[in-house]
Figure 1 (cartoon, rainbow, N blue to C red):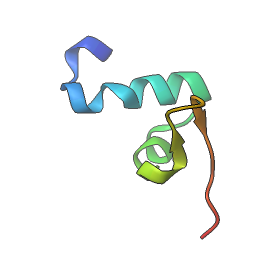
Figure 2: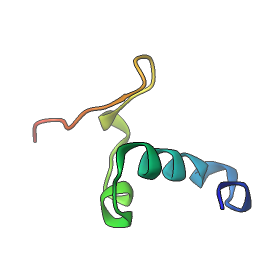
Figure 3: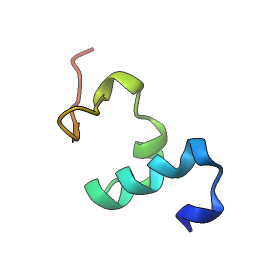
Figure 4: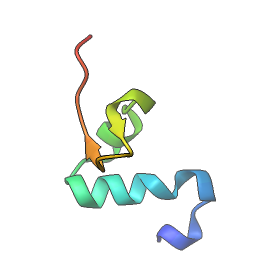
Length: 46
């Protein structure tokens, strides 16, 4: 599945499967909620 997606969308599969997120939750993430250095997903206060 991941390999069939365009390169810019492949990370959505990693986040969804690794964090147990549903489609709407994955597509609702913003860039600032992803911590690439620590490999974490963090909800930011709004």
